[in-house]
Image (cartoon, rainbow, N blue to C red; front, side):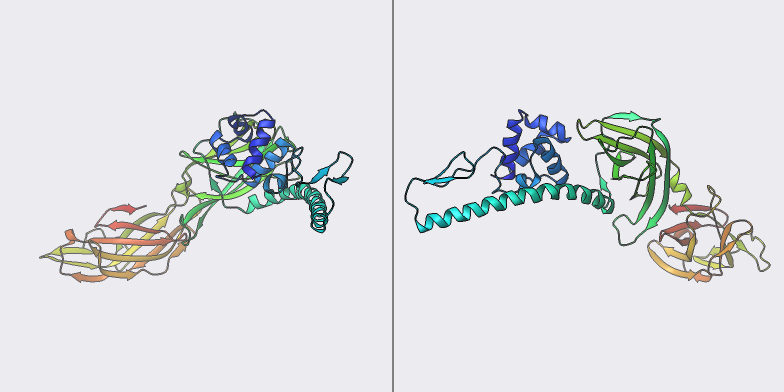
Length: 386
């Protein structure tokens, strides 16, 4: 029998419909139907649950040559199996070929018995390995909402949410939040509940494994795409009736502000004083001259420390998408007294273009590899790329 045929037979023995079996496993009727039609294979988690529900080893469900409990294999023609142990009587006279068949059959039966013993021991080992592998797996995107269940907002003795920005240019989502989570439930049932952390943000949802520590706290870590706000739950699923408890940790917001660079600039004269007469940029008779000392100033308006800071700066003169002039700005300097970063450039450019047709851009690359751009005018500034 195939795995699907065995699941169907065991389901009928239990008097369950496909929909009822799906509800016990937290799945849809269509998922069970695909298993029984051998169009899909259950995951290891589902195989373990099926093994517990039907009272058969996982090995029995997977191996086509392994009969179901209580389903005796039909003996070969001419061989009769009596009820007394494994005594075998023969209707015809034994031939050499029949003797060898009986010997092989006996060996196969012993191998099957040993296989069942090994499978039962293996299931226990696999359960432990699954918990370890879940911690190493990448976070998986799940349904857009927390599973319909009991929501408990005051069910934790304590909790902690720590996050930090990560950058990897080789990833599809290059800027992510690395989360470290912990929660200690007031009601702890590790023997009957399966734990995980669920993170929600603007209709999206992610999960990661929750591991129980000696102090009765669940801990977990994962990465999610950069989001300005998210909500964290400790999700506890009852292994018997599949009831789910979602224990609210908290909703964290305003995250993106902590990782943005704020920028201002000013033109300066030879004495280092602010130059406010507009003489640094002149444009007349279809020609533009940009000459003077330009100061970049970076600051963080939302925090007392920089989560992101500038590591490289440029001044760029563009016409549409074409760079006409560019200049690397001096290395960024940090002023501890006012907690700000400064960089300086000294352009001396003349181009046969009207300034109305040009863009003068202050460009900065931050510590996470993100490139920021701001327009430079005579007296004001506006950010063009967040």
